[in-house]
Image (cartoon, rainbow, N blue to C red; front, side, top):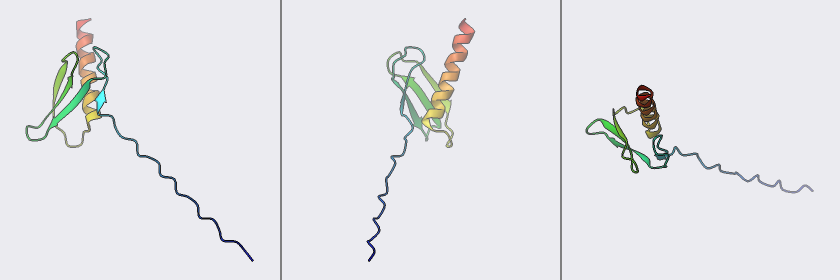
Length: 83
């Protein structure tokens, strides 16, 4: 007589989440947050430590990571002009 087959356990992998707080390129602290205001149509990226901030037009296809990337590009462009 045969035995019953053992049922295989299903292992759930946790889904990776996109970060919500980022590192500031100016002061180096992890204090940059993205505030999206859909009514006004703007996204504000601001560092809580050094108060560096940029405002970008709202795009429904962008995530906070995308606005942070634009923030990095804008800061690098400003630093490049100053040097």
